[in-house]
Structure formats: C-alpha cells, structure tokens
Image (cartoon, rainbow, N blue to C red; front, top):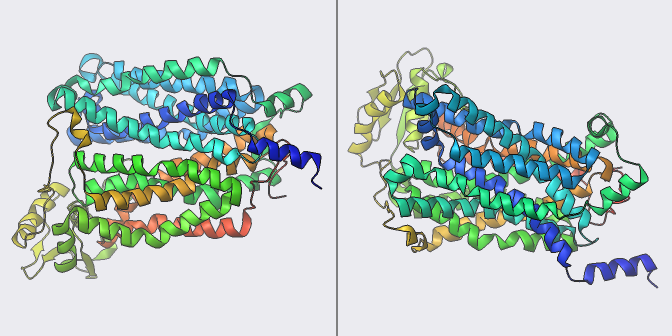
Amino acid sequence: MSSPSMSARTAEVDRPMTKEERKVILASSLGTVFEWYDFYLYGSLATIIGAQFFSQYPEGTRNIFALLAFAAGFLVRPFGALVFGRLGDLVGRKYTFLVTIVIMGASTFAVGLLPSSETIGISAAIILIILRCLQGLALGGEYGGAATYVAEHAPHGKRGFYTSFIQITATAGLFLSLLVILGVRGYLGEQAFLAWGWRIPFLLSAILLLISVWIRMQMQESPAFQKMKDEGTRSKAPLSEAFGQWRNAKVAILALFGLVMGQAVVWYTGQFYALFFLGSVLKVDGFTTNMLIAWSLLLGSGGFVLFGWLSDKIGRKPIIIGGMLLAAATYFPLFKLMSAEANPALSSAHANITVVMRADTAGCSFQFNPTGTASFTQPCDLAKAALASASVNYRVEATPGSRDVTVTVGNQPPVAITGSTRAEVAAQIAPRLAAVSYPTANNPTVVKMSGPFDIFREQPAVLIGILTLLVIYVTMVYGPIAAALVEMFPTRIRYTSMSLPYHIGNGWFGGLMPATAFAMIAQTGDVFYGLWYPIVIAVVCAVIGILFVRESKDNDIDALEVSSR
C-alpha cells in the first residue's frame, strides 16, 4: 500500500495548474523578459549608443567606451546576486525581486531619455555607465528571486515544468527585442532611427515595467519562506552561512562547475555566438542574421517547457548533461555546414586557398580583449587581427629570430607587413585576397528592409534548421537548470546560494564566449577554432556533473539541507 504522504504527492502532481500559480509564473517571468530585452537592445545598438554618448572621442575610442559600458552590466551581476540574494533570504522573495524589477525597468527606460553628450557633455557617458551598473546589479538579483519564488510555489514533482516558463521568457525577451528593433528601424527608416528612433525600444520597456510591477504587487510571499519566517528559522547571515561554511560552499562550487558552467557556454553558443559567427565571421548581412536567429528562437523555444517537464520525469542531470555532450559532439559539423550554406564562396575559399603568415611567433600575443581596451601593436598581432577580421583561414609558420612578418596568399608573392595599425595592414593584404577572389566583407546576398513587414520574408530553410537545432541544445541545458539549482540549497540560504553560481557561470563563462573565440581564431588562423572554448568547457562540466552532482528532482525543498550531504 502507498503511504498517505505518497498519495498526497501523487494527487498534487496530477492536479491542473491553479490561477494563483499561473499568476506567480507570469509575475516572475516578466523580469527575465526584461533581462534579455535590455541585454540585446544595448548589445545590438552599442555602436549607435557610442556615437550618442561618447561623441567627444574618436570613433574607435567611443566604441571602446560603449563596449566598456556594456561589459559593466555583466561584471557587476555576481555582486548583485550577493546583495539581493542576501536581502531575499533576510526579508523575503517577493519584496526583493519587486525592488529588482523596478531598478532594472527604470534604468532601461532612463537610457531612452538620457540626453546625448552633445547636450550635457561627459555627464552623459557617466550617467550611462551608472545606469548600466544599476541594471547589472538588479539582474544579479532578479533571476535567483524569480526561480526561487516559482519553485517554492510549485507542487512537488512539477518544479521543472513550472520553472521552465522562466527559462523560455529569457528567449522571449531576446525575440521581442529583435522584433522591436527590426520593426522600428524598418518603419522609421535608417536615418531617423540613427538620429532618435533608437530610443523607442528603450522607452517601450515602460509598458513591461508597469505590467510586471502591478502583477507583483498583488502576489503573496512564497509558502516556504513564509513558513520559515513564522517559525523564526531564517538565516541571520546568509552570505557567511552560504559561502563561509564548507558543507554549503562546496554545493555552490559543484553547481557552478558541474552544471552552470557548461549550461552557460552552450546557451551563449546557440544564441549569441551563432549570431556573432553569422555576422562577423561569415559576413552575412545584419538583417538576414537577425531574422535567421529570430526564426530559430520561434521554432525552438518550446523545448524549454518540454525539457523542464521531462526533467520532472527522468531527472535534471540526464537532460542538462545530455545537452552539453550533444552540443560538444556536433558543434564542428553544424558550424561547418552553416558556413557552406550561409556563404558558399567564403567556405570554398577556406577549403581551397592557402594563406600563410610567417613571423617570429615569440612576438605574437594572445588577443583576448573582452572590453576592447587592450592594444596590440606588434606587426605579428596586426596581421593576425586583420586576417581574422576578414574571416581568412590561415596558418602560421614560425621564423625564429626574424624581424619580418609576411603574408602569402595562394601562389602570389608574399607581402611584407609594414603598417602600424590594423586598418593599414588590412589594406596591404586586401589586394592579394582580391587577386584570388577571396570574398570580402560585402556579402553579395545582402538584403535590405523596404518596410516593417519585411520581417516576415522567407529565409533559407537549411540555416534555420541548423540554428533551431542549436537552440534545442540551449533548451536542454537551460530548461531544467532553475529547478536543479533551487533544489540544491536549503530554504534559509537558497536565494543567495543559487544566484552567485548562476551569474558567475552565465555572466563570466558565457559572457566571455565571443571575445575568447575571436582570440582563439586570431591565434590559430582557423575560423572554427573558437568552438573549442564551449566544447572543452561543456565536456569538463559534464564529467564533473556526472561524478559529483547528485540528482535533485525528488528532493523535498522544504526539508532540504544540502543535496550533496
């Protein structure tokens, strides 16, 4: 016979979602929409923002400052996780992530109102960076609060399904931002959009803010926290208890290196690095690149809920780790097929045209430059950067003791690199590439919008299929991750404990993906070599997860101490 407690749990799993639970999910998910709506807005409009708020500087310098402001939002996210995670464990989930949504939404809206540097001078740049830091701090507290709040409302046996709706809205925010940018840009025209229209997507965030605040004001505290509060068992020092006690700290470390690290690189590769690879490496025009990603998000996003639901049946680990290993095993063939389909001429050049750079490699640097502030001035570095930026496949032959740096394209005579900037070196190499018909950055298949409804234009089916498969990998690793993290930590320090590994993993391991991949491409001359970054991290994470992370789907989160005891 089954016990009364088991029968009660079975009935709880089988019952339909209540109206109150739907409100909990909606209220929590809107913050994640904000997170990625803002992220993609700023990332895709960074060049325009640089011109608006750093116009007193030369173009190269202003773009560096724009990237620094962008990076600031990433770098402060773990600190936001500590600040708001501690607050959430002390005073409650509801009030804390009500604060984070207001800070985040108000900061995003304020960017749309901020006067340019032509109006208020350097103050514009300072205020912009402050707003980006506020956004990053709020984002650091938002995800942990939302995931914890939903999971603590979810019935036992449905946490993966309930929290998967938070995961799908991350992609919904990205998709929404794509539609808003493309729609506003197409409706206003390029000139008006560059002058003032770019502000509209930021200002429209006010609608999301008002709706989410109104909904969250009506919500009650999570049952698990309210019970703990009534019993007087709240942690008095969440930070020291979470990270100062080894039995809790080791679980956070395992969460980072056994789950989140791999999840982050698969997520960023499937959505953001795919975008970078299509546009910056394969030289596909911006409109087509954005639309291909948008279609893949639309077609693949149902996987978040599917794999969240499935993780309630078979476990979090098999799906998350399976997604990591599938991604690692197939990235190279998928990206090579993407290259052949997206830019056949460039793919053919990679396969058939030999390009050799000869230099004393002792003078070459590893060009890791995540903030855009590093300066690489040696001829060897300039040649590598110029070739990598032109998406040229090349190999490096070491000539120890030689002061000369030469580039040989096909059977042509070598060209000696004498330029002092990347642009000068690129101009030296360009005639040699043109002589063998190496494709330039001007993709001949560029498609321009003629109106706002061009967003529905037909796109290449094979590329959409590849990108959709990459998104499905994302849904495998990301769909169950919120439930897995919530279940690893006790209620009294859950908000604090889960937020930090999540934001270190996604903000740093994932956020550094494009910069690391470009440095690896420049170092080796292989446009696909950057894929080793997510592959190695995903495999290492999968091994750690298999060996040391325990399955958590059956944990009773109200009674849980730590999952690895």
